Length: 95
Image 1 (cartoon, rainbow, N blue to C red):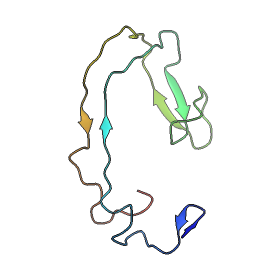
Image 2 (image 1 turned 90 degrees about the vertical axis):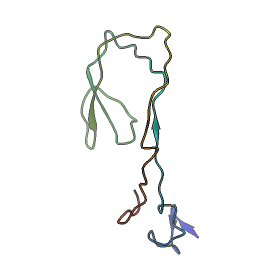
Image 3 (image 1 turned 45 degrees about the vertical axis):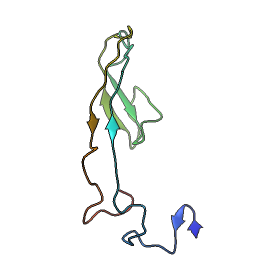
Image 4 (image 1 turned 45 degrees about the horizontal axis):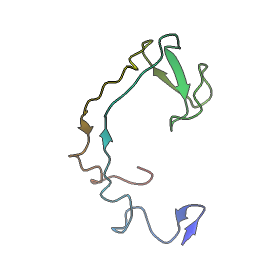
């Protein structure tokens, strides 16, 4: 049963837990950047939302090149983490 998005009958370390055997992959493919006249630093919340050029409580500072490479180019990038098991001993919610 869920209570506010939390399973109240299943512990995080239960073998049936969705956090057991976690799998995460970042697959980098074609990227286009159009920031020739934009800021070189911005701030977002931890999920990458609410971008701002000014810091705010809990924000994460990020750097971006002042560059434009929006011309069409394509490439197949690496898949990072595809061969790793993130569900090892000691992994627990909300990981």
